[in-house]
Amino acid sequence: MNVEQRHRRRWRPAVSTQVFAAQVALLVVVAVLGAVAAVWHERSRTDDDARERTVAVAVSIAQAPSTRDALRSADPTARLLPTTDAVSRASGMDFIVVMAPDRTRYTHSDRARIGGKFTGTIDRALRGETFTETYTGSLGPSIRAVTPVRDDDGRIVGLVSAGVTREHLSDQVRGSLPAVIAVVLIGLAAAVASSLGLERRLRRQTLGLTPDALRELYEHHDAVLHAIAEGMIVFDDAAPDGPAAVVNDEARRLLHLPDGPIMRADLPASLRGDDDLVDEIHLSGSRVLVASRQAVSGGTGRLGTVLTIRDRTQLQDVLGELDAVRSLANALSAQAHEHANRMHSVVTMIELGRRDDAVDFATQQLTTSQGVVEQLASAADPAVTALLVAKISEAAAVGVEVTVAAGADLVGGPLTPAESLTAVGNLVDNAVDAAGPGGWVEVDAGPTGDRSWSLRVADSGPGMDDDEFARSRARGYTTKDRGDRVHGRGLGLALLGQLADRRGGTLTVHRDPSTVELVLPVRGEEDRWASES
Image (tube, rainbow, N blue to C red; front, side, top):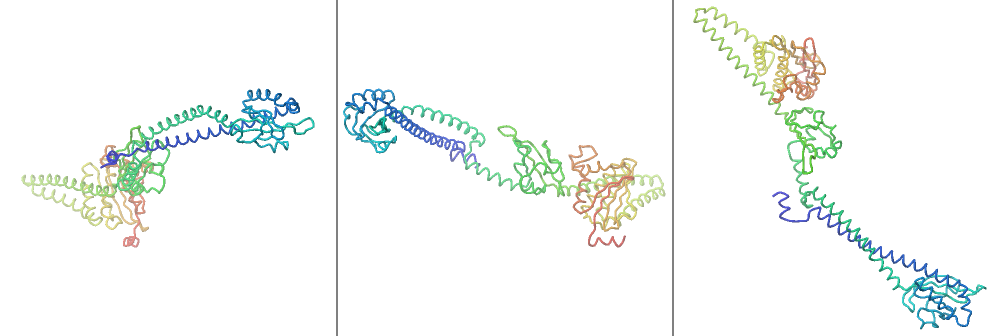
């Protein structure tokens, strides 16, 4: 059962839905807290405004000359009450109390309380200060200001208190609530709409999967990347100049990549492009790799490119040996056909009564073949001998003479039999192709006198310059028809270059005559060449 099936069977909110729900809950909490803070701020502002207004009203009445004159008159209430009532209506005060220093009220909004004692604090006013306080008086809780009234000599002859009740202030705050609530709701609606858009985008990006499903997908993805036997490198088109999005362990091993982020520049030069590849052979160090690269698309378009790499080193070695065996089989088949023709000629001569000519013809052909075999028997092991005999026959069929130099020593070189077949077969094939009909090829091998051994194949062809030789050691390069690459051609010198690098040797090319030389160091028992030379 895959992740999507488990997701359908055991329904849970998708990541986008959970994020949206969490955002909406957070937005509601923030909106409520914002509304409370706004109301609290409005109340604080209203209180501050009330304090400023009560102080201004109380001071203006206390400093008015008519107030001092009224306090010295026989009936202060009759002279002060019209003025305080008018000021209360104009300024929005709930009460303005003008009193004697002994708290006796001369004015009040409630006429029944005139003549009674003022219940608020007056001590600081009696000392000449103007102050405000919140006090529960005869009209309930209120914010009030108290200030002294002085005569011309500076003596305190009375007090003035102006105040606004809490109920009045609460009405003002409640009046502002609709505007506060409207602003909060508009902001909340805009935030929820934005969160809804984000939820839809997140749903598309997460494919509507739950957190558990995403976790399982990641774990499976990571496990598969580490388990597959192919190297895989993924580059994201969203960051074309950035590091690879995915590099598995096998890719690091095959390409000898370091730990950490991998850039395109860290790859072998032949693998840095972004064009499509299908099973193309590349060389990396001592490995023969088969690389494929293709674009990856999703629901939103092209996502990037995926490079997959398979190790073909051992398979290439086997194919080299198989190619040598195939060449030998083809040569033996050709020789069998040629010997059949020769036998037919001998039989015809005998039938015609020309027995001496038949004996001479047969003896001559036998001596020629035996001479080639005897020369190679002392110069190479049986497998290489058979391969050279086959190559000589194949080359002769196309008009190229292949010879083995006198004194050539292919027997005790540092190459294994399989490596000898690959090296000799590739070099001779390349030389025969370069020489062409009417040309010649010579194979030579043996110690060089400096604790090394060399394999040299010369031909009558035009040879290669340094640039062409450098390209020939690159992966898949060939001067033959490019269709040969389909069958793995064009790797001969590249594989020999790998062999030279692996053994600490060199592969060089010379002209006059055209010669390719493979030089390898010798060790252990192979040191006998040093003394022999």
